[in-house]
Image (tube, rainbow, N blue to C red; front, side, top):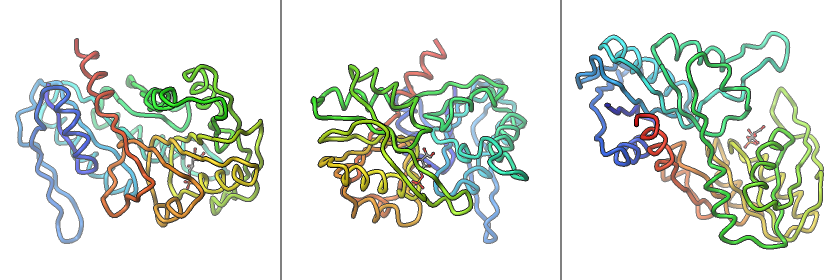
Length: 300
Ligand code: R5P
């Protein structure tokens, strides 16, 4: 078995490789002055089972193009199978048509991945439980909820409530409640402007307590979390923590979150964050062991 990494999250790929007692294989990725890439696999992959780690994040188009070329180079070089570890699957929030005339962008990505030779996909906390069935190849859908539940269970108290910042997160919050000995949960009902993505109104469904943990899949602009936290604070919650799997942290999100009423924001390393996007309230936990364990189990 060989493991390679694209340029999106080499730190995570190295940790996964360590967990599998492997070293990362060699890929040459050249960027020309006009920003086009050229990719070449250096190691011999003929008839080998290959794992490729590539995430997306704040620059999905860049990392998807790179991924497509790496897949092509692996396939042309004769790889027997390609397991794509894509901890954050970019474009997943465009998994269906919201308004007439729209592209189903995730469907396009899936078609390309499969056409380019991906034989299995490993990913984390999809936005919707319908996403795995959009693929024709097997999908291993992992979740950070177990890690979050362990953290919560270490310090559980009677004055704690789990909160989903939108109705789409209800299944997630119910599952986390089961994993934390039935902690109570509430949800925020919000309306978004489909053109701008801005939140127009929000209210809480359920009872709140002194402490709240807001749980979400993705943090992009941070606006969902900040408006949820402001609403909870207005309703008497004094201690607010966030647990979210994928930290895209677009635009001013780091500043917005650091300046918010949220005390701590726990995310995972499914997306690599450059040092200048990190901030004091942010805590990053790694999903590398979970991925390495899954890949080991799959291959034994
Ligand atoms: C929405 O349905 C998702 O679960 C996240 O709440 C949302 O994508 C976060 O986006 P933002 O951080 O831009 O508000």
